[in-house]
Amino acid sequence: MLETQVKRNLYAIYESQIESARLQFKQNSGLEKIFCPDIDSTVLELYLIYFNAHGVAMTDAVEDWINRASDRCLQLGYTELGKLLRTHAEQEAGHHLMMIEDTYSLVASWNTRHTQQLNAEWFLSLPIAESTHRYRQLHEDVIASNTPFAQVAIEYEIEMLSVRYGSQLIQQSQKVLGSKITEGLTFMEEHVSVDIGHTQLNAKLLKNFLQEYPENVNVLVEIGGKALDAYAGFLNHCLRSAQEHARILAGITQMS
Image (cartoon, rainbow, N blue to C red; front, side, top):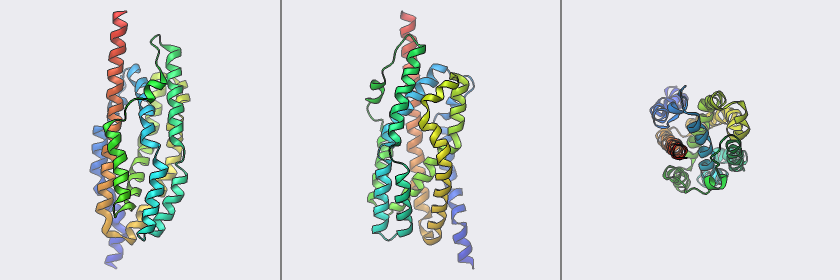
């Protein structure tokens, strides 16, 4: 009876132990500055462009990562999770293409309202950030390890970010930049909607997996925390890039 009760509480244990990583994400991601009521509109607009342009490298391999994690789970005997991850992978196909399109759309919108013109190709050709390398390597390490099931913790924590912060970011963008800005936020808008269901699915996967393999709760917490840390670094890189770009543009304006 006690063993059964412990298994049922493992999801609650995961939620409790991962909370510190979620708090650190909130503090380290730069989102509090983005949500500040007096944020500079230029910084916010550039932030959205950098988010989508840099985000391509954060999302272009997601389908492949989940598929390969599924294969590894099946190889190691985690059959139920492996099959469900395969289904989830299909839902992630081509999402990086939306970020490319949003980059072009946001730059085009900028160029209609600013004398200092931007080039979408320039943004999309920027080097991959160190935080993105860390995020990509985390997936590869998990897939190659004996704990490929930890992919579900990555999916759970990252997709939950859309649910927790996506709507707030869209609302802030509309408030500061106008309602038409959402024409360039299709990736963000879709994930705010879709990731509610994905998060519920991931929570179910976590619960079921922990009931069967309770000894792995610490691994899931560790990998989920690493994913949040890398994603916070990614968002911070986008913010710093936007701030620096805005300073450069302001300097050009003063000189002209």
